[in-house]
Amino acid sequence: MTETGALTKLGLRMQNRKYIFPNVIELGIAAGHSFDVNVYLIDGGTEYVLLDIGLDESLGELIDLIREMDFPLSKCKMVIATHADADHVQALAKARERLKTKAAAHPKAAVLLEAGETEQTFAKIAAQNFEIAMPPCKIDTKLKDGDSIKVGKLKLDVWSTPGHTPGQLSFKLGSLLFSGDNIYRDGCVGVIDAHHGSSLPQFISSLERIRDDKEAEILLPSHGPYFRKDPAMLQATIDRLKQYQYMADFGTCAVKWPLQEQWEKDILAGKLPDV
Image (cartoon, rainbow, N blue to C red; front, side):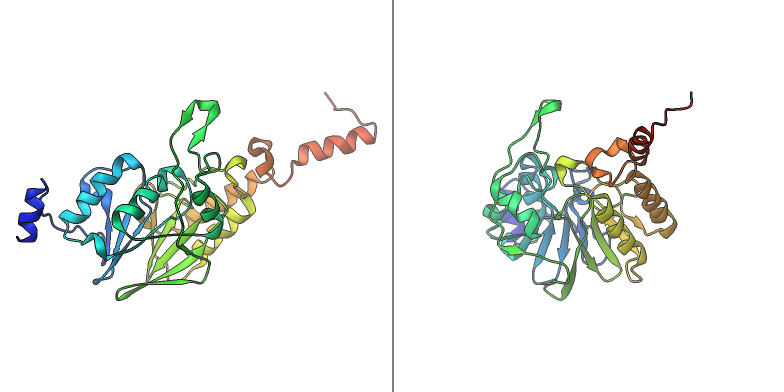
């Protein structure tokens, strides 16, 4: 039976591969609708990797789509978590099993993923009465800054880009940077939350690294459209996050609150507010 015949028997149909850049497919674009997270397929010719995998409810459609584009499931080298947020990797354990492949993540993300942790991964937000399952997943490969991942004829360079979470990774492929939840086209960034392990100083350093890298020209985030890197926009975001470090709005993510520090000094000096 031909591959087309096999797919037809399963109720699937062959479809063209929609590369957004050489060797790169975003599965939401290929499907014609967005998923909860951008899932990137990096095609190395003889094998491929997936960056993030999304929610359990979307996994069946994603796997069907991969097959319809004539990518053998057995050629998936690994599924890589940019970080441990549930919207990115709730389906990681099932994907690892169904694709018979490896799961990879930063060591700090691996701790959460292997434990099926729910608070830091935002699988459970009690105050908003929100909760989804977070199945534990064995992480076969721990990735750190400076590593490289060979994908057939390609090489992905691994960057550690903490800030949004302690274990967030980005990946560089030539002039392309898969930038996770670091920065979006409108200048917004991934959520900053103490329960999430967010760090404003680390976030700023990660954004400065993205801004200053001479090779990265196109940013492919985990949410929203990909876009050409704009150093001025990145600088505006960096400046905004630098202000956040001294604002009570960000609670324990702030490094200090100058108003409170001055008030404590004024009380010690017996100085009252001038009203």
